[in-house]
Image (cartoon, rainbow, N blue to C red):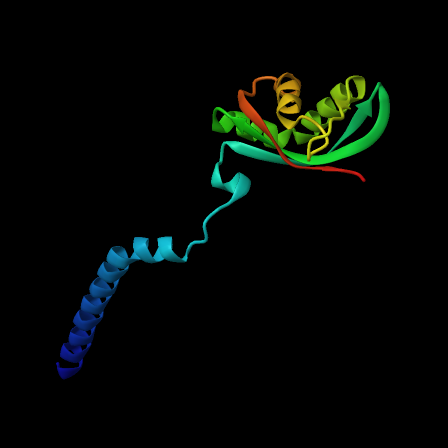
Amino acid sequence: MQKTKTSHQRWKLFAILAFVGLSLVSILGPNVAQASAPKKEGAMANPLSVEITGIVVPVARNRRLVNYAFMSIMVYTADDRSANLVRANMFLVKDAIVRATSRAPIVEDRSAAGFDVMAFARQLYPVVQSSIVGARITRIEIRDPEMMR
């Protein structure tokens, strides 16, 4: 009889400690998780954005090739489905950009980037939009443009 009373008391103590522990975790859990979680940057900060790296585009002056521009582009989409389509078909976007810029290269200017970044983003928007059927793209941002020389 003494043995079952002791095991019953241990069981009660275990249940109380488990309840108190779970209560503390539920109260402190979200605050601790938020404090310890690193802040997301770049593409992971916005799940509707997709970063496409390794884009190489020709730069021309007077219809002659003078340089190459290396860059990344950030594609912002309207919904999760569109973002997933862009992620799954990045190779189509890169191919469309290469084809479009081979026909109409970037025109060189004297700015720090070597070309008009905003004009180039406007030029790329219909190219990227048409490269993936069904994706709703809201805007395109040119990131880290660098000239070859």
